[in-house]
Image (spheres, protein in one colour):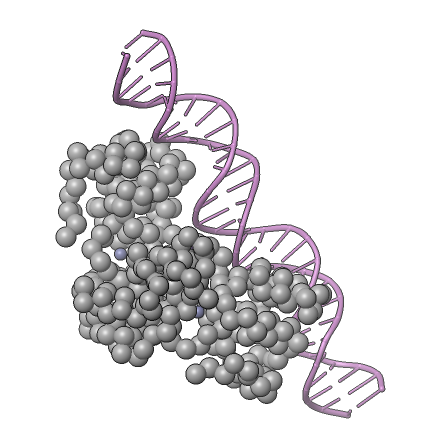
Length: 142
Length: 142
DNA sequence: AGAGCGAATTAGAACTATTCCAAATCCACG
DNA sequence: CGTGGATTTGGAATAGTTCTAATTCGCTCT
Ligand SMILES: [Mn+2]
Ligand SMILES: [Mn+2]
Ligand SMILES: [Zn+2]
Ligand SMILES: [Zn+2]
């Protein structure tokens, strides 16, 4: 299970692992993502971050999100060509996109299912990641 | 199994079903998609279509592709935020995206697997479609 | 503490894929 | 043939993201 509260040291270490520094901006961006476990766009992250750090720029939010994605503290989710969304849930999971409301829900994926899916690949295909997106309607969720 | 060669009448009917007319532009766009079973972008479709119909506009290619998607003769595929790609394979299948080459491969999906995947959804979630994308590397394919 | 220096941040310009718009064209029907 | 609504067309507009170049930051070394 991913730690809900990453220590500042562990956080800095994850960045250091790929040759990046820790910065106040990166901490704040990561903080807002952990605080509310949803799937905000870069713009939405920007709005939330500005409450804590009003001087941050949108470019920096993009930079920080990219840094967090690279050191695997955050995942990227895309629905069609809509704005990229950022997901702080590191557990193996799929996404359910409610087309009526636009809401996104995390769907836990047992290892068994991932293996089953991976098994459909013919010889010669080596998948580093599997992304599963459901589209439909969800009743009374969250 | 999807017909490789749709008759012009069946084609026109699929359009009529959703209240659209058949047009030469729509036929040509559909034709180039069926001819080469890959996953071209709108721009790539545009280039191919212009060989047969040099006066067609890019806007019309977008319009035609949208019409074909709506009447379910063509599917849409998106990888991250890259340009939308169009897939003429109507069988249930997943996509394998080779990150090294950028190539896209269709992966047949047996019903069993789709059911297994659908079964991970908690009560209250009703999926109208399931999209599966593999990312990795494929050796010597196609 | 102060200087040096590469990394990070910033504001704004640039870019790209797509959609919008308004005018021209087409075409099925009467 | 003439009309009217659908379709096509070229160009403008849009949205999200990336790029650029100048500034600022914050270690490290003295
Ligand atoms: Mn949506
Ligand atoms: Mn790629
Ligand atoms: Zn998620
Ligand atoms: Zn396909």
